[in-house]
Image (cartoon, rainbow, N blue to C red; front, top):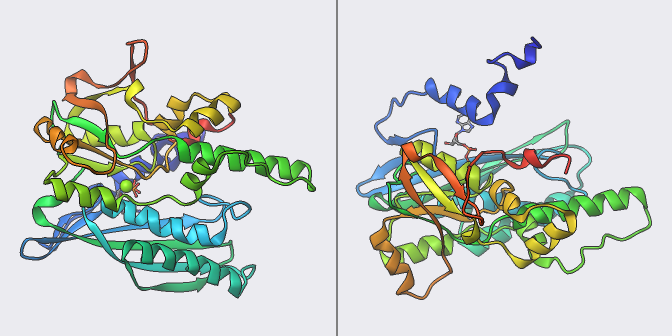
Length: 350
Ligand code: ADP
Ligand code: MG
């Protein structure tokens, strides 16, 4: 057997297996650590009735972003936005960030100014303070690590683990668009490579490009939930795709689910480009990722509160059931298919 394929190899463990392995050794020595590894943020007790949440993300050039088509200002904005999204996923309000950079010699001062233009734009848009970080030289392009800190009342925090049978599964916006935006950028990059003279042709696809390049954290949903007095029984943000996130919620809550295919919100531009590229738009929604919408479950009794108040659209896409009933998608032809966490890599080669 190939050494890299033994059961204990990094390759066979995968990202989530590795995190589980790291988590088994984690012990909390401090009573203030209420939740450690395993949710969108860690949860810390700081004062009576209040919680701090904290999350961190690492972005590497060539792995998470491609500077051929991602302008540095957008990258700065997105790097902040994805962290704030994790704070929102705990039903908390973001307040501070720190930013750490590894910068190689190919970057100019103007490039770093552009990056911070985006970072500060996101801070201003969401009322967040940049309070520190670290800067170092790098041999391999640009590395950005952002940590975000947020706050919530103790009884408002939404973990991944609280979903209960009969809860309604909701999502805050359309899915699959960011993935289709990436497909468009990749296609135009290939065209440019082949013919150095031609200009990229993004056609009439503004929305999906913006979804890929400049996602917005859903702080408005956290505000709306507060306004109508609803605390989701579970919540996370959609960074890896609906299937993967639903499986996390179900595993950690010890439940199953039914997601109804025709209820999954998919934008018209996503459908149009998917048809052009011969990709199933539902597969893009299930496995595409980077949508940064909030996926949450609510008690049935809370559902009418959404309908009785004017607020951002919320889409009910399924329900929670007993674990013994498994995690399934009800397809348009009323068949049932197992939800699988394929993640975006499953699309390679398409
Ligand atoms: P998200 O997609 O919401 O950012 P991740 O899947 O990256 O979440 O992480 C899941 C959980 O694992 C989080 O609690 C995160 O803090 C933790 N985690 C990820 N990588 C590590 C690591 N190398 N060491 C310790 N904890 C980690
Ligand atoms: Mg998350």
